Image 1 (cartoon, rainbow, N blue to C red):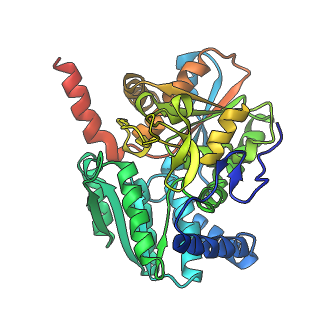
Image 2: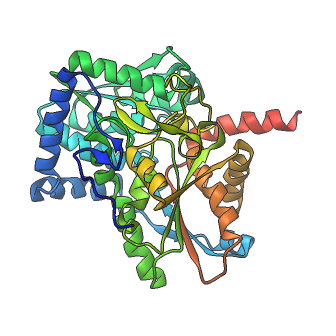
Image 3: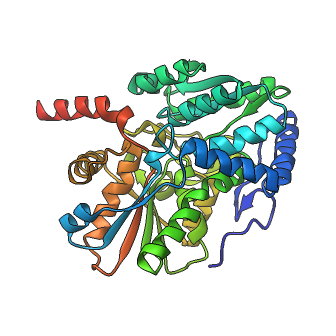
Length: 392
């Protein structure tokens, strides 16, 4: 299969599109027009890369996990260290790109959704830096799980709105953010955090997150003299995964593997349907309503996925697998103890599958695992989960 191309605007095969009210479609058309205008503009890109380097701290290392490699006795394991970015995850890459676009569009108010809080923190950070009003929608359940990140967002000057509707998780936060945009589109910029939503959001997020694979591809060629056997990333909506995969899409010999939670596995268990104004593989009932999901990683607790991931799954270019909460907790602890790197629970999904795969390969093969975020935000949650497990 050749590199993914959008034969029709906003579509990846049958997936994608924009199924929104006409007023909102007008706003999205303007957003697309401005994105296309600036994405290849030398001045815009110079400013984008300036902030990535000077503010975010890029490029991030591609670290050879020597002790983990020896422990497993298989493939050489490299970690793409997105956890070392300012604010602690890959989310800041896309946020910097979109905030610069918002600035050029004259926006004074920015809204965003967040699950684990990392996108919310990144958005609040950028809004503080550029002096913009910031509102973050977050499921009420997630505000409890990620209380530290709520405080960080408020410390940065953002207004955090707990969403109590539905399951009070990420999907419901997205619902509220879109409802806000419909009401306030004339003066509000929705800084969407994942590669989901109506066109042009998935394309825009991929564009800004592709910096991950642009770097890792160059880095692995320098370190190993060849491309990796596989690139592995966790996936909820799919921003860190599509960013990790983007530059490898034409390289047929490179396996691209997305790792989902067992109880929110839209790519391995979902069917085609509409969600948040676009078509994707989604966990839904017989009436087309999104089904309840659960993940110990709040950032992956979403019943759908990005349209390009849906296309990559159906076309066979990428593989998607699911891991259990128990496997994730084991991986979280193993990477911490063996390499001194505490991953986000989201990232620990990629680690959980990566360590299983690495053990089956030989020492001449290499894999890249994307450590999309650091685990500071999850340490208290994991502490309570392990304590509960121990007392059973």
